[in-house]
Length: 617
Image (tube, rainbow, N blue to C red; front, side):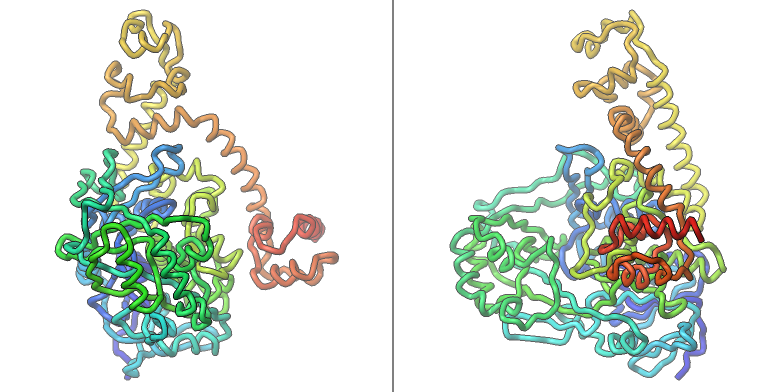
């Protein structure tokens, strides 16, 4: 059957990438269809019931500044909020929130259901309709053809998903949901390079069975914040989380049974995440450690399930039971869901343009774990960018491509399409060379104009943003123009810190022992500002020297990015290129000298030859 309604765009999957992609399209007025295996599992948190964290919190703030939904959802459904890394500089501060996973999921489901221009169908996509290397629609397992101009594939871990618990195997993308068994073969048929990755999740236990007297309480921080720029009041923490540790007995049980782990017995072929390893992997790789930290994280307000963060495992059930019961506070833990690993297919992202459109099939986009990433935030960011660029194609507009100086999202996409993936990709602050400029707190300053440009930030919100930036700029101007008067010498903070009349306010605030909060009450120009505005001014003042040096680095970076390479460039004509470099350049087809220099296997000598040839041609 050919469905009678033609769509502008079809989104395959309604996980975190699918949600952002479909909302970005439908909110711009494009008739959009989401096809999902289960409407009840829209935006389901398959693993950790949390949003944000190191670098991931930056991605969420950036999505929000571009008009995404994730930040608003976690502000409304979060149950514990923490600002991480506050002992370090503001460039690496990172918001994180524990979610009520069901409330989060149901909220996202309702948002999609109520969205204009968006239809939702529960089915499984089995094939793609492609004509002359242009996508035309999809075919489902029920043999229904849906036609569209654009298709965005966001299949998560469901492509030939295979669950492992010891010897036990089940075809599933996650426990309780079956796998998509045909699409991987479709991609191979179309010429895509398809690989295999692995991820995992820990057991869930009953909160009532935890001995709270034996675990550490992890309360919220006192620093108020919200993920979304549109949240009027910082959300409140409702619950505590807890910390406990593995021990020698736990490790001995794992070591005694390591041969029963599908990771070590050879049953799992996919490559797992280096930075989020299973507990058996940790015990083997870090044999010198006498314990590993575990976080006990409640999964919601209306459930007793607790997620054991740090204990991901695919060991047999009997081994998981035995090892969990050796852990302090969990001696009598009631295990409600067992941990497991899942293998799944992905497509190497070097096959994508920087818009996330595939190079092989026009108007076909990939976003999320199909591109080899891990994490809700990385998936959501890709979904949003794929959706925006799909919308641009539908109106013949310019593609939306940010560079690495503008956002963590740009770093994520550039890493994927330039370097490819050999293991699940996770975002870290260390991946961003210009992270001092890419702070979580200034995402609006960097990206709001884009969200407004694409119609995802309305005029009223954009006007409020402009007023906020104007207030910050006025505050900075005041600080830069004010010198301490003789009458101010007796102010306690100045007297106690030996500040003399004539001192430049801007200079004294750069001292480590003074801050804007300490002097704001003396000046009406500062006292009327919000806490967020004061914090932004304080960061600007204290880090201006570092920011200036980073801006100089950015200028050098942009010079290389501005040296474009024609898409039709023939690398075989460049004499002297090393074989590996030539092959990588031909495969990836970098858009600029800067991108070419970031390709693994391309050396500075190759770049020099390339620049000489481009100047001569």
